[in-house]
Every structure is written in structure tokens, then in C-alpha cells.
Image 1 (tube, rainbow, N blue to C red):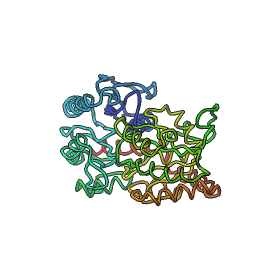
Image 2: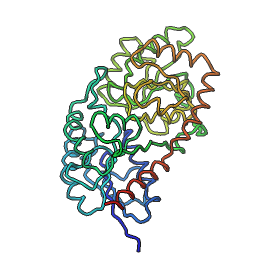
Image 3: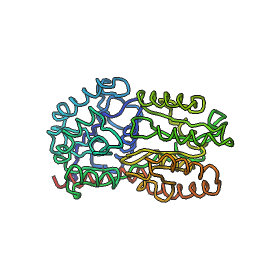
Image 4: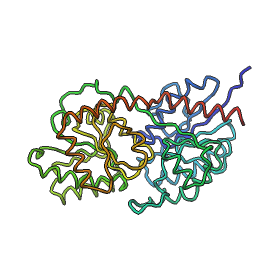
Length: 378
């Protein structure tokens, strides 16, 4: 008789307005059960939003939701992960945390590390206080205690090996995917602000390492060309403090009417923006993966992105790259793309080919295989 296993999934990163990590969590969980027919899965989350109806959710306190309770949620999640999750783990054969926020007291766990932004020493961006302290104090202990650590890119794996002194044999790479229904060029939209204007798009103004202030400066140079006087820059999604800094910078550049900044944008609006943008620019100094790059490609949008961290790995040959510290080079790449329709068409075609490598079903299948290999060994 085939043994049935019990797995707990720590999905406390989720809330009603999922961030990038929330999107990854939702898609892995929603595609996982089909590959684990002999496993009972309980998902610990403060919300059922976005999760398939057949998933067994152990609903937790709303205080865990970062978009609603900010620092309070951070402290509560820390307590829940280190203490509550430890006692919960005793009922399960395996515990999986979709982010690097498991418990250092659990032995039968697997975690996913998305990036090491908070601990990599780099003068071009700052470590982020509370998150940085957490990573420095707990992440190596978590990785050492975990049966396996999943990383979302080869670059992140290399960073974990280098900065946490972990054997590469203990880390397995599972690339992210993208939602093929939401992100495709066949979606149709009624007339709106995106369908009726020329614009450049960027996504995710969360923290200064996203480097969008340099994009603003490059955009100012583009606007100095008379033929692009009507061009706009849309900045969709982010966190209040950094977005306010960008708003202030737009005013300094006298571009407040040409730079549109929106904090939270529904998925359908984002896909519309991808479809109609002249190009998508991702100037980030550091990414563990770079999900918006493949989302833009899936919508038929030509991509310009920084040639740093994981972005060349994810974008392949389907993007124009630039040095993220070089505003002049970014300006040149934007002008190169928006003045050359043949180049834009070529990048779109390469983008469609590139994204064939990324599929949530395949990602979930790999995660399921990692689970079963560890369950059978332990």
C-alpha cells in the first residue's frame, strides 16, 4: 500500500494584494497538487484570495498581511514562523516555506530563497534594515537546517553558495513561470489611457535598488527630443516611500504631467499596459529572478533591462541590455528601440521564443519532485 504523506505549506506571505513573492507562491501552490497524488497538503495563509477552491487552507490571522499591517505584520510573521510553525510542523512529514521565512527549529523543512538583496555587500544599493537583520541572523541557519533549499535562478544559487557558504549540492534551481492566460498578446481591451497614448513602462517601484530614479533621468533626455514630446512614462506598483521620492524627482525634472505613478494596479490593467507600451524598461540593480521581464515578453512588449544579477539569465537574447549605473547608456537603449520598429519587432519575436523556458506547471512539477525525493530519503 502506498504511503500517504502530509505536507504543510507556509504561505504567510500572501494577502489580498499579492506582491511578486505572493504571485510566485500562488502559482506554485495552485499547480502543485496534481503532481502529488499521495500527499495531503495544508496551506497556512491569512487569505484564500487567489488560491484554487480545492486547496485546503488553514486560515490565519489577518495581522500577517504586510500590505495592511506593515511592520506589525512583519513582527507577527516572525513570531509565527519561529514559534507557531515549529509546533505545527510536528503534525507533518514535511514543511515547505515559499519564502525564506521558515523556523530555525524545524529539521524537516524546505525553503525557497528568491534573492539575497539584504545581505550582499554592495555600495550601489543599501541593505534594508529590519529585513537585513533578519537575513543576516537567520537565513544561513535556515538554509543549513533545511533538507533542500530551492532558488529561483542560477544567479541566486551562486549567491547563496558564495555569501552563505553553502554546498551547491544542497540547492536546486526552480525557475519561475508566468500566467499564460493573463499575459498574452491576444487579450483585448476597451479604449483607455494605455491604448490611446505613447508610453514607456516600468513595474515595481518598491525600493531604491529598483533604480527607477536613473530611468527618470534618462526619460528626461528622451523628452528633450521634440518628436517624443507626447511620450509618457508609467510606473506601476510599488511602496509608498520610494514612490513618493520618485514623485518628488518627477517634479524637479518638470515632468509631473508626463510621469504617471500608481501604487497598486490590478492584474488586467498591468497586462494592458504591457501590451500597448512602446517598450518595457527594467533598470534594477539586483534581481533574484525578474518576473516582469518574462511577463512583458509574453504580452509582446520589447524589453530593455539591466545587464546585472539574474536578468541576463532570464531575458536570454530577447532584450537590450545596459549598465544599470550608466544613465547615458540607458538613454541610448531607449532611443535605439523606440526609433527602430524592425528592432522592436525582432525583440518581440525573440521574447516569445525565450518565454517557452518558463512554465508554472513545470516549476510546480520540479518542486513536487524535490518534495518526494526528500520524503523518501527521510
